[in-house]
Image (cartoon, rainbow, N blue to C red):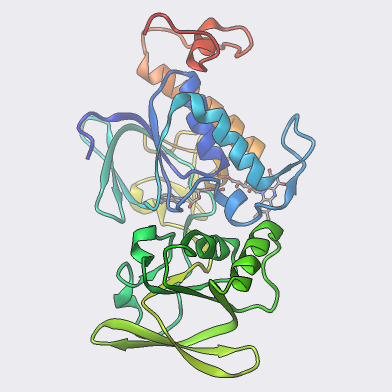
Length: 346
Ligand SMILES: Cc1cc2nc3c(=O)[nH]c(=O)nc-3n(C[C@H](O)[C@H](O)[C@H](O)COP(=O)(O)OP(=O)(O)OC[C@H]3O[C@@H](n4cnc5c(N)ncnc54)[C@H](O)[C@@H]3O)c2cc1C
């Protein structure tokens, strides 16, 4: 755990969590973002990356995945630290009015303020419904992207109907002894660039593609040795396997936030509309996860909420001085923080 508490800890790197970090950056407040997925973007990347959004102010249309990327680009001046593949399981207020955040991987974080931007819930990998495989996880079976060294000279089986599955095939084609890609649907995902590269690798004999599904994992002495696969022509084959990478997508899991001590309504965190603070002082909620009179689950509403939370936290951290509204166009202080003009004081 970090000894000195971080000024603000954001739970969730969806569009609202990312923009929250940007607004905190404008206020000169240090923050970290903790995210269950292996990358940022929340629902925009996980559920509809290739669909256009038409109601972002001043942006006539933008693909959801591109919006997430633009938000990350906008955040760059602040060098925000992200912690991926980490789910916050509990938030505990401490006697000194700071918070300890517990995670699913035994790391803990210590912060002065917490902003829950957890949206539709923690996106966690969909797992294979096969007997005997739980004990292979993180040894021979992986649900997230794997380091090249883990596949070196191995027979690697990659399965999933997602673009991430094809990305994984492309990533490992030069380190694995052989890659077999098992794809359940007859049609590959609509990502022409990735599919083009996949077919090229198939033609070069580097990758074999099977349209079918895994029906059984063959495990001997707690080690995966092979897989039984039924193809779309109903032929069953046994294939050798050293490493199995399943990229089946992620599904959101809503937590019980009452266990964190906050008041909720229908599993959403109750907040006031002035500063989006929950019933626990110092713990805020923005975006799809909060609830107040008139709440709408829209990205632009989350952006507004993030802005006011940043002002509220700035006011708490600087009780002696009023927090003025400043414009990014004209404020020397903000332009320095954004790196647009040199900061000669630091
Ligand atoms: C198909 C579709 C189309 C949409 N179109 C539009 C549109 O056109 N315009 C619009 O305004 N809105 C649209 N929306 C809604 C919009 O996507 C959401 O309002 C927005 O994503 C909410 O952002 P968020 O940051 O609050 O949450 P999310 O995007 O849900 O992100 C939350 C993040 O927090 C992470 N997380 C959750 N719990 C934890 C935890 N305990 N620990 C660590 N990480 C955690 C999750 O993994 C996730 O990445 C659409 C939604 C869908 C599904």
